[in-house]
Image 1: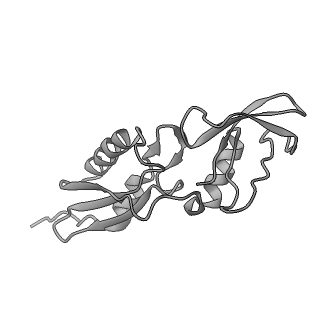
Image 2: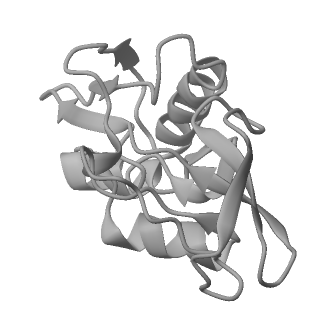
Length: 159
């Protein structure tokens, strides 16, 4: 008799590494810390808990669909995705790899919470920058311009 290998939490997490934030497609939901928990039961069902970067984030529907798709493709038959609003997501949860990827993709990463943020241009590293708009392509980013090199860039706000 041949039995299937049971799916594990490690299998689920490996599959979830392919799920990205559609607003920042070079960051996985794990790197940006939207992914909060993964539990696999003995029957191979999986429950995933995610937290939006801010209340009302329109990307959560797409992220939920992508989670279900990734886990179904990885052999999980019963997938549940729960959204947790408490504790609220914070940029403090972002990995250092995520911050590095933001900078590499011309988005100034957030500074620490509670500290006046010294934003550096992700292109030339100058601190001679100014805010053009507090609201960028998403609510979690602002638009800035570097007065040294003249290039505009997004800044991921510390939340």
